[in-house]
Length: 370
Image (cartoon, rainbow, N blue to C red):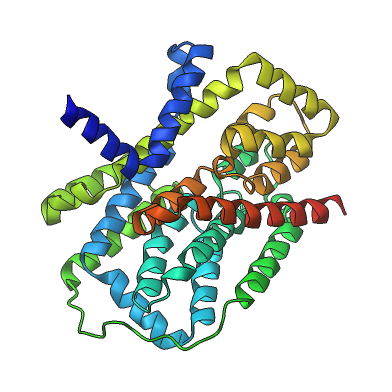
């Protein structure tokens, strides 16, 4: 019995986010009994793409590719501020190509290696938070940059040229704010703690690079995601099956639990009635408020049933991704990655995250109102 309690305690310490999510979800289950509708909560495409990206990134890590890239970046940009600029805006622009969660999965490990290898761990929280904002906001002008965009683009049959223009000013504002925030980082030369030679498995690196492209193509729906899943799984089984042990299954489980949590919250009559009343009066505010309760993607799906004002709804579920941690599930990816490296700074991270996100949210709301 003591061993079981010890294991549970260790699990809670190691997977704090997942543990809290499970408790909150269990509470919602008392209000919404388990039924067949639960199966509709899950975005299976996202979960499969998430697994594929996590597996491929784990494979790239095993080849020391991130260490090699980090050294190239340090030699190219030289200073702390310019490297942080490159990491933040790399995330920002990469999100225009792939979804925000995939952008973070790709860039966060690289960020840690760059900062840790140069004794700049104290900037990890700040950089991760800037990257999270960049990831949530970078893809908001494209139909495929964020999952909620793809849904609304299809649901309302929005013209592509019109879609690009709806959030253009907000996107420019975010880029300017990110630049200003990073400008406060002291610009000192970077020096590697350890400059020993890195051994890179080139054969496996090329294989995982190809798999990475295949996953990107599946995100673009060029390749069916089930075919991409099959290719990734079979290839890794033959190349190095130990990679499967390094996949962050807890993160996938966290997404699953939050899908249930968000789905249940949207079905609780009091919350549903409260949000639907706000929608009638102000779609923009309703969307932002709803994101803070059930996150951005469920909000887009939920509120689309109540309004034809797709412009304000689209703006709200994008800038509403800012705010608290659960307003965007992509934020959980960053939190989990941060806690891997600095678990004792959870409280400090959450406070800093909330302050910066709230500042950005207020600024974007002002720009939108104007």
